[in-house]
Length: 235
Image (cartoon, rainbow, N blue to C red; front, top):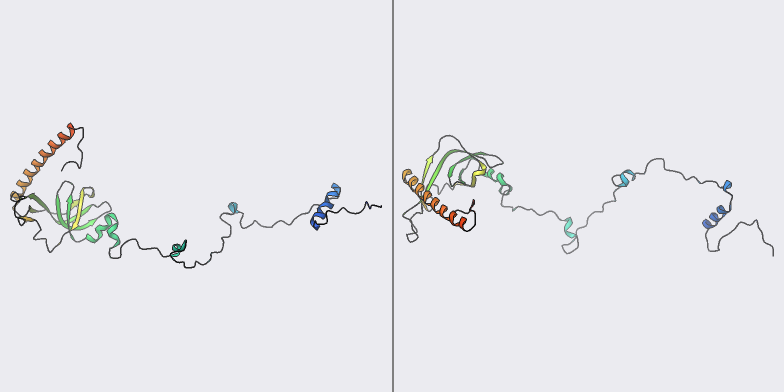
C-alpha cells in the first residue's frame, strides 16, 4: 500500500473547513506563517466612554400602552392624583404661608403668656412675626358670679379691651393661636361680657395670684415624689 506523504493533512470527516485550515497552519514552519491583520476601527466606539455608561445609545422606548387596574404595573402610566383637597387653597397647608389669607383682616392673637391682642394684620414673615395696626389688648377674668350650679345664661368671663397706640409687633415664637375675628359676633362674644377695666384687672390679678399659689403647692408635691415640674405640667 502506497502512502502519499505530500498530501495535506485532513481532520475528521465531520469537521468543517475552518478546522482544516487551522490544522494546515499548525503544520507550517514558523518562518512561513503570515500574520492576519484585521482592520481596526478608525474611530472610538460610540459606547466606549466611561465603560459605555454615558455614551451608549439608549434602547428605543416603546410607547406605553394603557393597562387596567388589575394588571401588574398598570398604575405606572396613570396621571398623579392631587394631594390637596379641591375645596381648600394650598396656603392652608404651608406653615406660615397660611397667614396670606389673613392679611388686611382683623385677627385674634393669643400668646404663650396668656395675653390676647386683636388688630388688623398688615404684614408677616416666614417666622410668623406679625405686624398689627388698630390693635388693642383684651383683658379677661373669670366671672365670680358664674358657678357650676348657676344659670348657663350667666357669662363665664368678664372682658375689657384696652386700646394700644401705634403699630404692634408680635414675635412668632410667642404666638400660640392666630385666627380671624367674626365681625358679626364681635360686639357680643359668646360666653363673655364686657366690664369696666378696673374690675377686670383686679379680678385677673387675684385669680393669677391664686393660680400661682396652687402651682407652687403642686410643684412642691411633685418634687417630694421625685418629679421635677417643668413647662406644661402646671395648669
